[in-house]
Length: 126
Image (cartoon, rainbow, N blue to C red; front, side, top):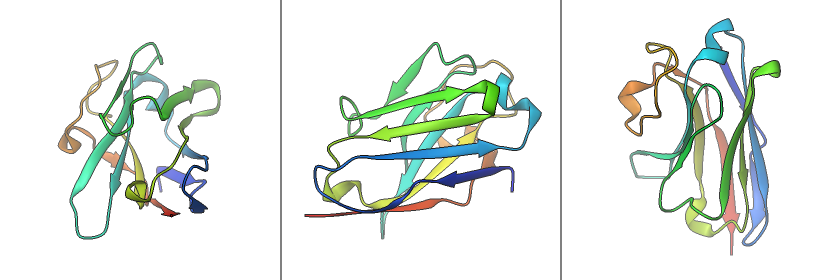
């Protein structure tokens, strides 16, 4: 599995979680990455993205001011820090990388991302 997420779990509203995504691919350091989520009965949606260098980040409106995406290329790892979690954040969270375009800008559409993790469940109760 090229990307492995961890850090999900069941928390109360207002709690925080940090998701990690470890890549086994050498190309990780040269590609944009993103976090997506899929809630029960809904399609997969963009949450946050980061350029290969980490210089630029982009958030969905639902994640602005509460979530923070970052990466550590020395450890081939991408993170999603989630604060003040709400029940509507309940979903399976996936990390993904756009390995078809080296050093490209962040894309919000999932079809740009060709390498995906298996997902990690986040459940937020009120």
